[in-house]
Amino acid sequence: MDVVSKRFALFGFIAGWSIATTAETETGPTFQLALAVVSCIYFLDDKMKNLSRASTTGLGLFASGWVVGLLVVPVIPTFILSRTWCLELLTSLVAYVFLFLGCIHRDQTKFLPLCIDCLKRNLLHF
Figure 1 (tube, rainbow, N blue to C red):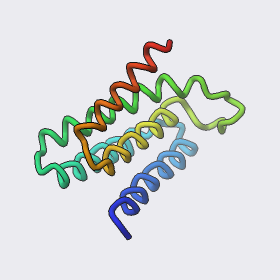
Figure 2 (cartoon, rainbow, N blue to C red):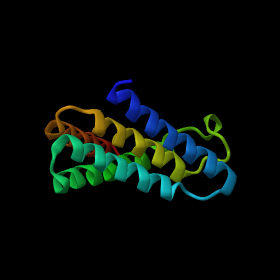
Figure 3 (cartoon, rainbow, N blue to C red):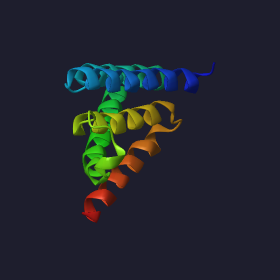
Figure 4 (cartoon, rainbow, N blue to C red):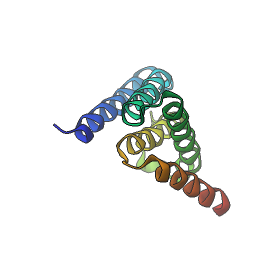
C-alpha cells in the first residue's frame, strides 16, 4: 500500500466514523475533526520537516475547508441527504477532503494559495 492509499484509508475511516456517530448521537464530529487536523499536521510535518509551517498549513487547510463547506453545503438540496446529516457533519466532510488533499499534494507552496483563490472566488460569487 502506498502513502496516498494509507492516508485515504485514514481520512475515509474518520469520515465514516463521523457519519456513524452523528447519526446515533446527534452531536457534531468535534473529536474526529481534531483527530483529522492533528493527523494532517503530522503528515505535513513528516514531509516539510518544520512543525510551525506544517501547523500553519494544516490549520489553514482546515479553515479553508470549513469556510468552503459552510458556503457549499446549504446549496445542496435536502432531498439528496439523509435526515440525520446536519450542517456541521456535511461541513466537516468537506474539511476532511481539504485536509486529505493537502496531505497528499506534493508542492504545498502552490496548494494553499489555490485553496485561498477558490475561497475568494466563492465569496465573490455570493
